[in-house]
Image 1: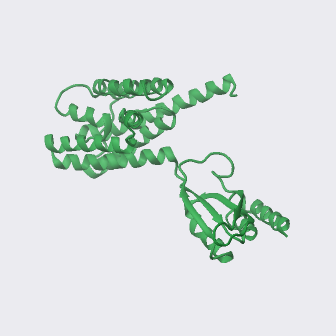
Image 2: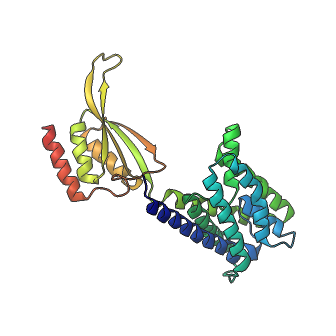
Image 3: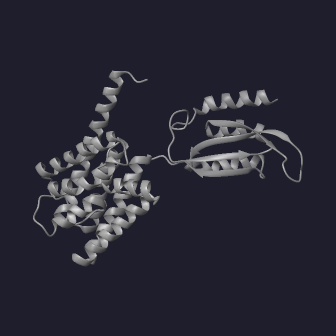
Length: 304
């Protein structure tokens, strides 16, 4: 159980990071997108679209259009997330209302890219800390919960409709640049949420498991989990105990892993799968190469 002091520290840290997300998102909106009439996806895009036709402060529009999605979220996500989201959206609205950033560039391509970069960074940081700055994610959760439609599809359909309306009412060019902004925003948001490291899981089944285990430790310095398995089902009709090797490595090292295994057993059965999130252990940082060699030598001695 976390102590009261730890919980308070964690809560303050989360809100401090959410504030940073609000600042970054407001820079993307006020310094890039808003002065040039560009849109983003989601609720922010709807508010920006309405802003082009009605002279109403963007802060008010963000709050008004976020209310229905927050009500939906009340029935689909935790109350803590909704509370944080209310604070975040109000904070973003207030920051946009009172802060005036200088327009940095008039180049449309730079506006799309850097506007999306700042906005995506802000949204990503907020989501990592249990909040949302845009209600379209809540809409996706609601439809997924009620109708089984994937969150990604809901957000995609929402934005296809939004950008189609933009192309019809404003211009195709603005719609195309807005799509580019949305793509950059989405990619940066994913990058912030999932992290810069791209991990991949690998399961290895081989008769030479006793040699492969120390080789992976020595060459990659990667930790692993060993499962006990049996083989021989089917036509062979023979049971044999063996170890199944399960490890998680950075995608950069996948070719090296294949080479290590192939040099020992070119007929090894290898299953590769994506890993969405990792925490703890030696997953975030590989074993020190010297420690890996010591462990490899220890395993080799145990197998003799």
